Figure (tube, rainbow, N blue to C red):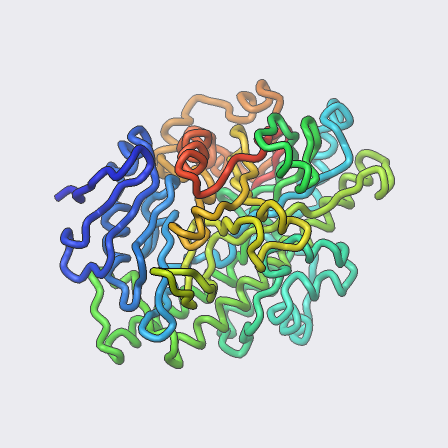
Length: 481
């Protein structure tokens, strides 16, 4: 049975509450007709409808144009639940807690690195541990680990990795308060300890880029971005630590469902009331995993800067590397939003979705308060990435949320089949992109055709008004796990 859809306008579609017993709110999907064709072939629309059955859900079960099938909620899903009556769900947050993106700007122009990209990429690959099971250069004592989980990127900066001003340009200042390391299992701690400061595998990367096009000069200037400028994008998360936190609490939440008499159409949506012992423990552990991820990206940022200085033989002043922003994709945040003329605190689950807060919002860093914070949308290897900015309409419609990337259209197995007889390395090099990866499997699984057209995805959120295009970035060098 196909999920019934009503097209509200060129970029919004509705799944009515009447579709499925137990739906408390409608489903709203942001997509154009071409993207909707691919979305309909995936079972993700059923997951949007299932998400609408969460106790305490408010407004709608939302999906961004990069939506695809995930565990529990679809990747690209956004739900918010009331603090008094609502729940929290690990499957509504994702396994890779605070998988996110950081963008660095430099004082270099594209011509400054042309002809030197192979050395740069080799240096990055050598200095930044990557790949499945990779072990980091960081050695943490139990005390260090606890401080890192409580303080995130703040603790890393205190240890001399990076600069205090880095923290001013991160979501939450690189640290979610009220993290609870005691809520984390010994297995999660063991998995995470050797992986701090590592890139991981799959769609995670460090990418050297340049700004190919600027759409909004005012915002670009506020973000310190200009045409032809060299930037570096870092995409990684909480590695095995976050994965284990999610795994552990799915077991806990499945037991809690019976305890609290919660009935949902999919066990993968396992949850517990926000104000329950299980809910509070999950939030504490999830925040610790989010801090692990911000710390991870901070270590990698420091090593990226070191590689640039050494490979290009330039001074820190000449490089002038600085964090533009750092955004989280898989996370639950307690936020205040206006609904029906009243401000209410809700638990916003963003799973494969990005915050998009507008000018004037108190959670926007002071440096960007006049325009809104940067929204970072990564491509993958051969495709462009984008910088967007949050809008007031996003606050009104999507709890200040937008897309987080392109979204897969080919499974990893299908991508391998499509890549038979091809050299993705050579194809990318012919486009002027130098790639270094730990193995061929990752390269073919993450080839550009495995993903939706990122230009189409970004155009939808731009045209729908839930975020606005600022700049388009072109890759010239990539390392992958």
